[in-house]
Amino acid sequence: MRKQQQPSLNGPIPGSSLTTEPRSRPWEKPAKLSTVTETAEYYLDKLSAPKPLAKLLDKIEEGAPLTLIADTFQEVGVMKGIHSLDVGILITPVLIEFMKAMAEQEEIEYVIGTEDEDDEADEGLAMQVVSEIFAEKSPVEHLLSKENMEDVVAPEEEEEEKDTSKGLMSRASAEEI
Image (cartoon, rainbow, N blue to C red):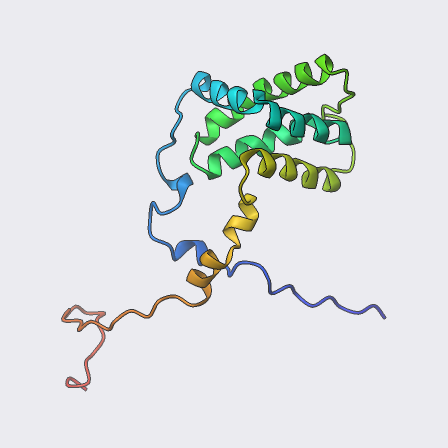
C-alpha cells in the first residue's frame, strides 16, 4: 500500500485574506498608472537599464519563456498596485516584443512560450527575473513573510466593548439572564 501524504500546514489559513482592513493591500487601491502608454513607458524604462537588462537576458538565455516572464511582470505589477489587471493584460504583448527585440539584438536564442512544454521549472526562472529586477522579495515571499503571518496567526486582542444593542438577535447580557 502507498502511504497517504500528510496535508501541508505551511500555507495561509483559509479566509485569512478576509481579516485585513479594507484597502490595506496595494491591489485594493487605485492603480498608480492608469493608461497602457504610461505603463509601457514604466516597464521599458525599468527593463532598459543596463543591470536589469543583463539579468533579463541571462534568464532568457537559460530558457525562461518570454510569455511567462511578461505574465509574471504584469501579475507583480497588479499586486504592487502599479497598474490594473486590464492594463497588465494589454501591456503583456509589448513586453514580449521588447524582450524578443533585445534577445535578437544580442543574438540570444529565446523561447516564446506558446509551445507545449513543462512549465514548472520555467515558473521559478520567471519569478527570479521579476524579483531580481524589482530588487525586492517575491510576491509569494512577501505575502508569507513573518509580518503578514503574525497578523493572521496571532491577531491583536481587541478590548471588549459593552454591547448596548437591544435588537432581536443581540446577545443577552449576564444581567438579563
